[in-house]
Amino acid sequence: MKQVIAYIKPHKLENVMLALHKIEGLTGISVLKMQGCGRSRKETSDAIFDEETYGLVSRLKLEIACCDDLVEQVIAAIQESAHTGLRGDGKIYLLPVLDAVRISTGDTGEMAI
Image 1 (tube, rainbow, N blue to C red):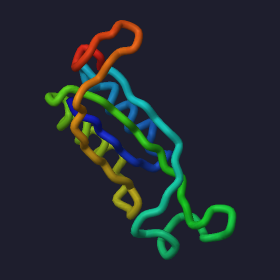
Image 2: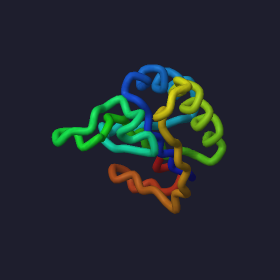
Image 3: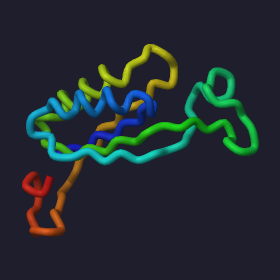
């Protein structure tokens, strides 16, 4: 099992969600509103540094737990559908998942996702 964590621009969420919903066997996606800054902070950022924003830009964080055989499809779907060609398009991280437990049933491992 793996966890895919992706940071994307908010206006690309619809495209990303449509692409992810096409992946058969993908069981769930969590989306969180975030703020942050990366390499392009201040000089090329789409937000102006001030005391209210501190140079932070709005992004969405997607968290997806999936079986190993879906990882490449998930990453490709996010990468293609979130791409604008501009700096700040986002990042995708891949982490191992040691185990999972479904609270309602007690299922563990891949059965829990």
